Image 1: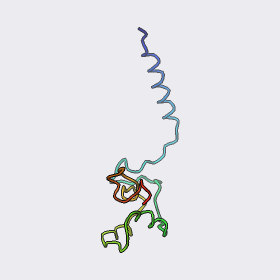
Image 2 (image 1 turned 180 degrees about the vertical axis):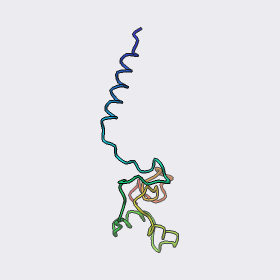
Image 3 (image 1 turned 120 degrees about the vertical axis):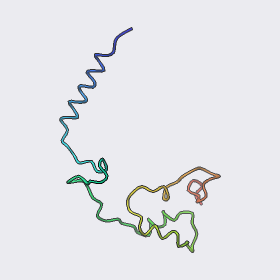
Image 4 (image 1 turned 180 degrees about the horizontal axis):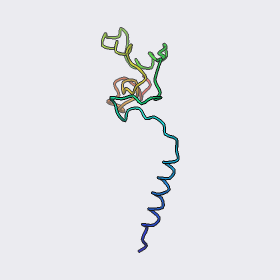
Length: 98
């Protein structure tokens, strides 16, 4: 059997050299209580009629008042406006084209 330790150490050392040569970029979210200086910020959320049509896919008007949360929805991840499970659990018809 061949000992692969020298190759593994070389890979690790190369990775460390590459990582140390990359310019430091602020990473938001590492310390949630502190926003790093220079971290990108979302300043505007564009929600046009097409965005609302997509977000309300499979829901018929009149829309219940509980859907007013969409007015406050920002550009963060939400599973609400993405296809979920396949039929028969696809109640909003994301996968069937309803």
